[in-house]
Amino acid sequence: MNTFFLKFAVLFMLIPGFSSSENPDPDFKIISFEEFESLTSADSEKLRIYNFWATWCAPCIREMPHFEEASKDNPDLELVFISMDDGRRPERVTSFMKRKNIQSPVYLLNDVDFNSWIDKVDKSWTGAIPATLFILPDGKRRFHEGELEANELQNLIDQLKP
Amino acid sequence: MKKTNPLILTFFALLCITQISLAQNAGYSVGDEAMDFELTNVDGSLVSLSGMENAKGAFVIFSCNTCPYVKAYEDRMIQLHEKYAPQGYPVIAINPNDAQVSPGDSFDAMKKRAQEKDFPFPYLHDESQEVIKAYGGSRTPHVYLLNRENGKFIVKYIGAIDNNYQDASAVTRHYAAEAVEAVIKGQNVGEKTTKAIGCSIKWSRNSE
Image (cartoon, rainbow over all chains, first blue to last red):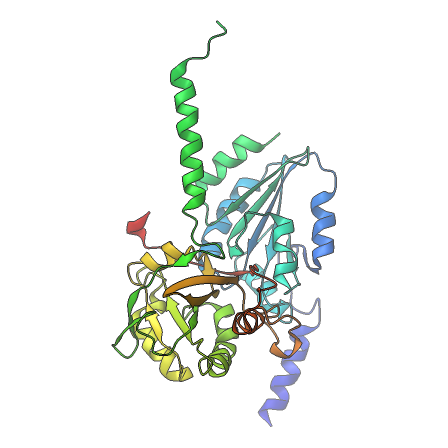
């Protein structure tokens, strides 16, 4: 009996626009590796930062605020969080984004054939997360595997930014 | 003016040497001899490669309790062991994570997980992280297939178990099984290394 109402309530919560929030929702979408590649190969005047993370990854979550802080009010930077979460359960990511008030765009890269694309992101990447790809306006890349402290990230950005 | 200061040259030479030696310390490549180890199993016994009776080799898999990718692969690790241990290639799971950094990976938690999943293979604690450093494992799960050749354990394959952690029935490449099948038949392993997204190793704070 109660389960019927519960299902009904869950249904309403899933309808977009039904649950209200004060902030505009940050950008979230599910992308393929091809879409990721076209993102990274596009022209840009900015230093682009792609941070690979997942909702269950403790060191990733620890470093996220440093990335948000560094890119906040900085028009020379473009930050995108690339989620490695399960593409069948995107609500885990969107609810995390709400809970942690993530302001930067989050794209869930939904391709589990990891061996087919890890080397294309960077040859030095072993596949462990967190990991971060920096792309300079001239197309040059810099890759970092492992957690970054706030000052380490800032030093990297200072070195790389146009 | 044009002369380059020999001190600067020496400095750059040293820098290059350091870079090269760092790269070489990144662990084993296929073809290398893997070191033996003696680590504590969840049942309290000590397990070593050379002590595995009738083993022609082993799947050394760096694993843990807390990583969702490991959890997705635990049943497949059991299947791998059940199929290939009778043919001389058992699974040996090793947890390298520091329990202070990752409390869910403590030895007690390992015992509990091994009991819950009824692991048929040893589940060892690399408390000093010496084994993971020597092998060069960087994530969990990370597989090293070893083959015993003239008393030495030679690395034949490094990488992932297969190419779909989400759905075992949708796997199109069984990398680890394909590698051991080739080794058993005395053939060359086709795909010698593969990469996969995995959880980072939780290094001890003292070691950094």
